[in-house]
Image 1 (cartoon, rainbow, N blue to C red):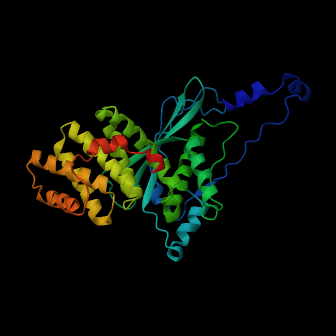
Image 2 (cartoon, rainbow, N blue to C red; image 1 turned 45 degrees about the horizontal axis):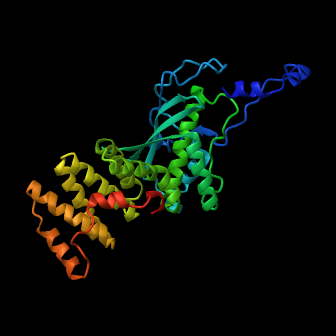
Image 3 (cartoon, helix red, strand yellow; image 1 turned 45 degrees about the vertical axis):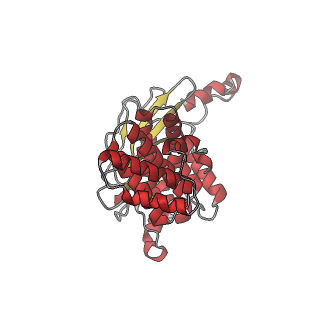
Length: 344
């Protein structure tokens, strides 16, 4: 498609004057991938499935119509990651997460044609029964790279990323190569604590889904909101299991509210207990949320027949400390009133 657009915008008179000219030379990828002969990329191995219409008929290199069902188990690794792994003992940068592009679907709408990548996050070196995932475009990842480079230039020095090509953006080879490069880019960023905990990185993964889930919950569409809250929770557990607390409390509140309104009381009770443990473990001082979770836990525990005396005692301590608990906002009201998750 890109090559057709270039031909469309090239003046006809110029083409006639210069003749056919030499064949076009494709720009090189910034992230050139090399064979991982030492087996260091086992954590990046995986399969990549392309939709049947992933390869458009607009390309002219003979790759059209092919569908990659599985990439070679002999994965590829960027040179910077090879060096990072080689010096892992000196720098103590263990990669605890694996990022795998499992699907790459070409999407066509009235405005553009692009590839939508599905990226799963899994714990490395162990069985992960609950992987979380995101879907994103090349442009989303490129914006993440630019924002990280702007704020953390030292940590992002020489970090590789594939260029936007002038042509052959939708071939099986290009999509597969980019998928591996995206995995390696995210793996490197997540291995650097400063980058992994940055608002830019966390925002890329779950803050926008939090905003969508909050909107659906506010409008009473709990069945649609619940999967978003669940995936946000899974992403938070993998990316930042110890914070930021405000985001985690909002997600837990959304999970309790949705499960409660869908009569999944056991799940609602479990997530309310998880929130109360968060207050204990982190000494979180968000009193309005604490009161709302205690009141929800007392109510749900009474309905499912679970001991609620510890929550009643904690609520009483807050009252004795001077906090108003009567007519305090409910958990649902806290979700509705919460400020934009992207700014908290």
